[in-house]
Amino acid sequence: MLSKLSSLDTLAFTSQAEKLSGQCSVTLFERAIAGHPSQDDDQLINWQLQGETDAAGHRLLHLHLDGAVRLVCQRCLETFLYPVQAENSFLVVDNESELAIGEDDPDAIERVLASSRFDGFELLEDELILSLPYVPRHEQCPNLPEALQDDGTQSAQEVAPKRKNPFKVLKQLKKDQD
Image 1 (spheres, rainbow, N blue to C red):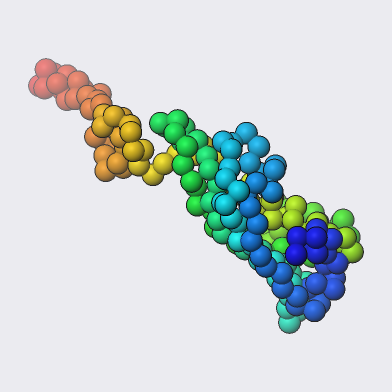
Image 2: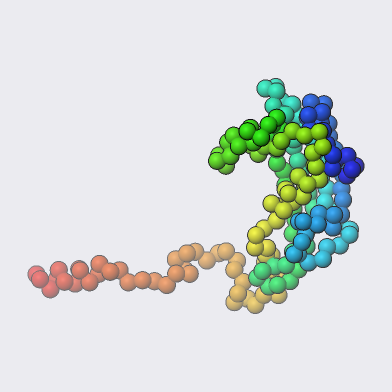
């Protein structure tokens, strides 16, 4: 299945609304796990790639990833499994000039260039990389001292020290002039 994924004909895949899915060890995603703790072979990433041609004739690739990657918490420095769930759609375009259309619009659908030998595995790996946090950390670190725990219940006013009102002095000056 991975060999077919690594050399997709995007035009045929989208026009025939083909679907590929499977699961593979996270260790196969070498670029995504580089710099992270060693991963177990039994950590699986479920993936799905589906082609579609919509009513307007746009060719689309729909991608879905689900699994977990072992990361190091930057708060307590312990390893933990980070759950990954990613879904994205890509518009398949015919030429490079169409790739730049909507590049400045953050809501625009991402585009990929049509190819007879498109590497779908590389697309999956790119999406896995993008789904990992820049600063990984537990929701609640198990061994962090209580004083360092941030449960998110403190408001900004409680954290910031109280400042004196600078206009209070003006009020006092006004009283002195009367």
